Image (cartoon, rainbow, N blue to C red):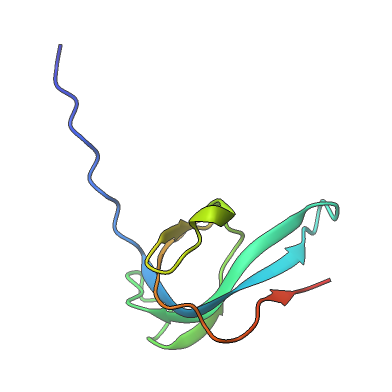
Length: 94
């Protein structure tokens, strides 16, 4: 039987600093809330944004308990390494 090689950690697509949670209602299912992050992006490997630009991510796929500084989170198409959390309060959009 061949040996299974351990998966190497997948590097993040970008870093997100000064981040905060953005909670909103889903467009197609208003009964469910959707979580996103807003923050300043750095080291964007796809070179979509310059360092320091404020962005709002697409919907999070990472469980809430794993959204912590120095954690790796996943959205629909991107992986972010979280830097320090911002001092601004989280936002809820109705």
